Length: 177
Image 1: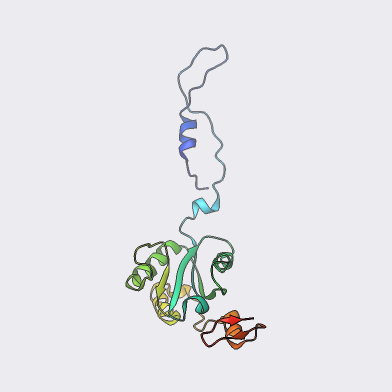
Image 2 (image 1 turned 90 degrees about the vertical axis):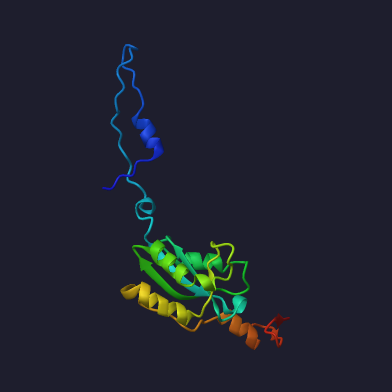
């Protein structure tokens, strides 16, 4: 069992203990049962690197390269596909890695000159095609890359452009009702 000692645990282990008659005895370290640390604490570098795009919101030359430690990595993609964007994100790759932090950082360094927001590095969008990211992943992820989808499904966006969503598509692709 790997034990992680927190600041609270260190403070607790340094406490003074008084005994029965009220006399102070010399300080000693009490016996402390340490709980099993949560898996997330032990495995801070393990997780999934994801490559997603949203052709309807950003076009076909912008991807997001991110990382999540969630047990269900698609939850993060669904969260990002919420109310802030008009269409859902398409997943090009989900790569499980024992060093997801390092893999994500390596990809971010590789595409640094293509970062959409050059001021805020927490924004993980890059001017790149899914194929360019796939090629970089082959170099960095190696055997971890099992499946990669180059062409986004973009079901909602395509249905909206074709007028299949109950409205009519305008020339610019916007939907009217």
